[in-house]
Image 1 (cartoon, rainbow, N blue to C red):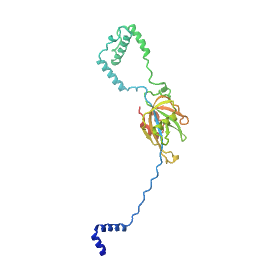
Image 2 (tube, helix red, strand yellow):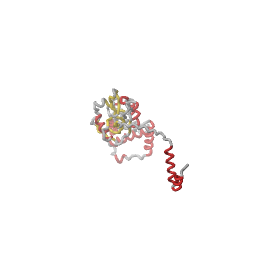
Image 3 (spheres, rainbow, N blue to C red):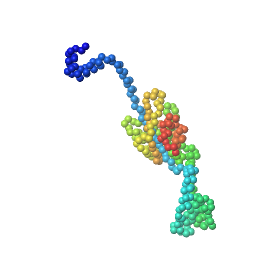
Image 4 (cartoon, helix red, strand yellow):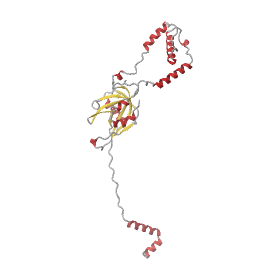
Length: 287
């Protein structure tokens, strides 16, 4: 039973009495044991590296497919059928070697577009046409589209596989094993990534190349698996940058790389390990 003094005080200040009652109940309630959340371990700073995907772009046009050849031939026939005849009498002197050369080329274009008997020679061949044909035979010897480096399987020659994109790979020794990787280097403390990429390329491949790094931003990142010797406590992160070779050739530093090769995407797959391939395959051109 509440005393008369408490009842009188509650009548005078009902709000204060209510707060006092709530505080008394909270104090009398049993305490709930609090379990402290375990402190997360401090994340170790990853080891930063930069890699260069050095690209030699195609140097000749791609061989057209059968469908493309048929399409271009069809368009050529339409163009030949609808175009106005060229007024060669206005541009060439009659009976001159230039006129004879133009007539020979025009007959060849006609025969190529429509086939025989279009563009066939009618009548006797003049002396000027004979001279023009002999001159054109000497001039029209086309260079082969297959380079000598392709025949000899010279993977160090920059002229091989002229229709494809080539990428530079270096042969290195890591943990007693021979591996193929892109040029790669570490990042010093406070160093910008694109500066580290340029420095690493020069250290491993020499300064006998004119190269151009496309952007200051990396085109991809690769997280190699942690070696068992370190217990997986430290993480390696490799940021890849795209670059083009403009002139020169690789002269690898023998302390960092034992060999090099210019390879297509398909050839790279056969030389690198599975984890490395899964990390870089989307950064390379399919053709």
